[in-house]
Image 1 (cartoon, helix red, strand yellow):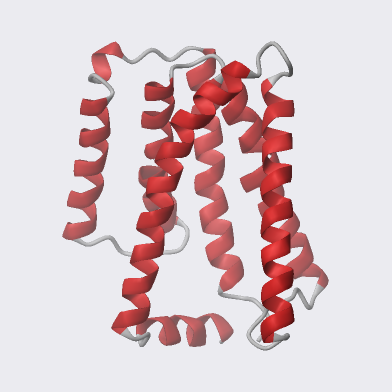
Image 2: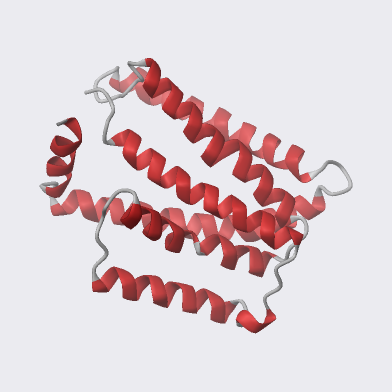
Length: 202
């Protein structure tokens, strides 16, 4: 019942809200793409100081502190209105699963792999995320993909493959394998988060 109501609410969302969501998703994609290359240099620069796991832990720790400060400031200004907190044990458990599947484990796999693979190949593997999310969304969430979405996915993958120098030069070593499994876990995280957001307490 709650899931159906949420779905109907999203379908009736104003066009401006959807446009804003698309802009945010686009900004996230740009930042994510740049982050792969920047972190590629960063993880190698730290090779003599610490291992990739320590690097990503410290990096994410700094990001967590910054985001926590922003959330606290926002909550202080706006109060509790409009904010969501887990109300049931199951919701806390679901958040914990998302944190492990979409946070701790894939980040370790990705940065361990990034230390071994080239930034270009790492970026290409990471950008196949949209393919796995689409497959899981159709198979698990029963969502439908229209022709525009399918064409966009194909163009995206082909474009990334072209920028990476073609698939014939792609090697699947240990680093690339770790990044691939990290990408699969992130795709699972998207589905879990989507399901969680549709069943949260109102």
